[in-house]
Length: 376
Image 1 (cartoon, rainbow, N blue to C red):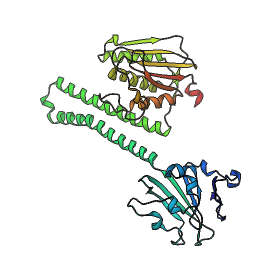
Image 2 (image 1 turned 90 degrees about the horizontal axis):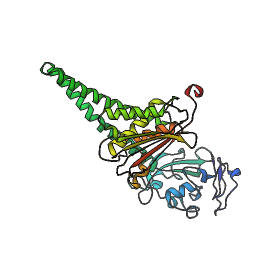
Image 3 (image 1 turned 60 degrees about the horizontal axis):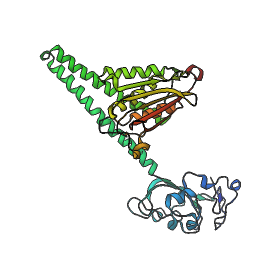
Image 4 (image 1 turned 45 degrees about the horizontal axis):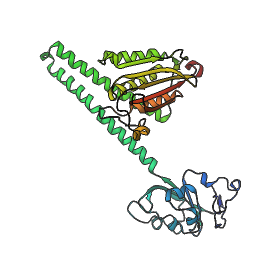
């Protein structure tokens, strides 16, 4: 193991060097790596238990400056407690414990004020079972992990809630039909089966959303590029809303020609258009305007805007995050997160703002790209 610091004396391998006080920088080539470049906190104590290395990440995590930490006993510079309030250094006793120990595995510990950190320790000896010459401690902030865990918990709760309603409906109608088939007329049976079909489609869409989120988060969302007539695709989605009962005069489609050839994944572009138009219809008001035009950077730009109250300024930066909902009118809050992932998988960009009539305005741009058979 090679350890060095830009603020202190250093250690290379198992060789022991005297601690050097002060904050003068050593030659990074001599040390092998600048500890301040490490993403995790690094704290090193010498054979007497005094701190000889305290990198920038450790200072950020602990809110203790390197100048204050260098030269002080490690239990004072890094006063850690376990989750039961016991002092960690007294429990582990790195310098006076068993000589066969090599370190401490990662565990959750508390800094003063109750801030939780992940701590790992390594005991460096010049010979097996010899005295500890260097104590190397790694610190990680748990906030990012907590955010991930909260996000996963919210996702599970949302999925459970969204699945409960359609599955209850499907189970209820199928059980009723099986038990009392002869008692219902053909029209009643048809209505029940149509409801079951609609709820099954709802479950299928939710599962597809979950798969998309998994692929987006892992960077495995595949894009199979084919020629896409974006103007015709917009027209199809508008007609679908009209067929579902929306008035035709609520939509205004403006396509500026000539448009560049667009090579994109048609199914995923349909997902993007479906989500944006559904949001505008459900959460917006007045005319829904869809503008399709060439982009200045050799691509195609699609803008969807409405005349509703719009999105509050303080919510603009959260629109494309998971579970953001613009109103209390239902939905999983996953649609716009998926939209952003799809657009970015195509190499494009998407933004949100306030439209000319004051409502929400979503604008995405897809660049010119090669077809799938030329890139696969």
